[in-house]
Length: 236
Image 1: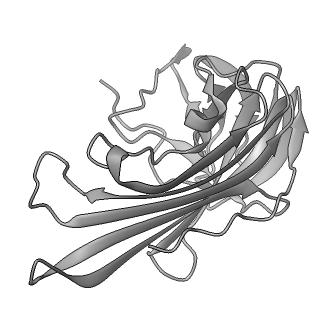
Image 2: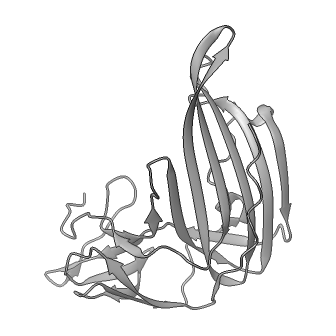
């Protein structure tokens, strides 16, 4: 599998304080609270105006490579990575990824109803662009870094979709990262492409699944959108 080209280096820092306003597309017309973990960080009014301001940081922080590469090789793939080159300017850097969704909670009878993620779908706003077809998905996430750190990586691995089944369909994953995170919050774009190809393995034709991932900063993130889950969705 051809390695994914290293994307252009684009910095998109947002500062130590996460503060912005944005218009949410396709909003339901109710009021809601934007949440980070269990903390209120902003509001979403009936017109769809999202206002966020917080000095809070994500509850869970990880090494920069772990936070930015959501497709790590499985135990089956690890010995089969033909390319795995990584540079992390500061290995001690701690990074947290806020999913593309900002969870929100609705006040009902004066009480905040907790929203759980996972496993049930929850009311959320997100920055996701599926492009012209379902094979490509672009997600813009909020990334917090406790210090400046540069992450650059190329990885190409081969395995199976179900590592516990040696006869499962072959799977290839290629990833490329070029991200300069600044201390505080940053916008980072994850572009994932999914493909299927027919290949011959030991004389048999099989469907091979190929996933490529490109991670970089972005100057033009997609708009926020309502994910369509009702604010009154039941929560266990």
